[in-house]
Image (cartoon, rainbow, N blue to C red; front, side):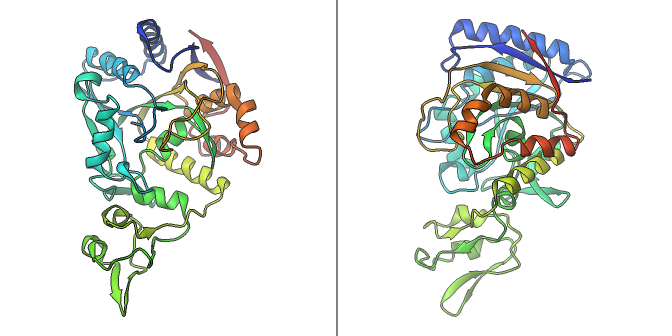
Length: 346
């Protein structure tokens, strides 16, 4: 059987008004009823909601009003929602819990507004993880077996597009997992920026950073947790962003497969305010096309396929040298889901 993808047309959803929220609430009722996502759960289950809080200086992110409606729905059904995120690999305010939390608050993801607390699954600096199949996944995710994935669908300069699979595979990996996806080497120290303060060596849990002769070196004892990128006050620790688009998409699919395995998950793609680049870009971008709506499915591969089918003409125009379908092919091969789907308009 083809996977069912539910579709709510929404042509003006960037700044959700009362009418949009009302329609989204009706959509949630249909999706939860038809998928029976909650019917098998006893009350008071901890349900993680994967979201992206947006980068500082950027307005292109999923607005908290939509997140609030999901939290309200879960709360009324007797469950306890939590918002889930992780640290970024690149340096900036979202690279550690303290400043990442402040950005989330600034963008409206407060307890009062969304009715759910925030959990950063990989610890204070992105260093906390557990391993599945040798892949580093955010430590606190280990205790969460039920997930709702709220992904803002958009273009991406390395993968063509970012949707449900990328939201899970990249978004819930620990910082060391993100390193594996983006690079084929361990971090290195830029000597021109290093002031020999020793913060990195003092922090390193594996004692992999040592002072040798006249400089600090990262040795082969490094396990790639990447906490050192966060603690360096001078941004002297770098990584080589040297994986190809094909490798990156394959690795994202692999992480998504390991994270979703043995978890009960429902996925949403918001085809609203569709920008050429991901929400990590520190500037607001103009949309590449009009808003389309909101899609949902138990199958993230089918969901991403449907979302891509609705946007691929524009994405191919922007990124003609990329093949964004690799992640869909890999996701299907790994058994995450299937690319064949039927669209059910609500």
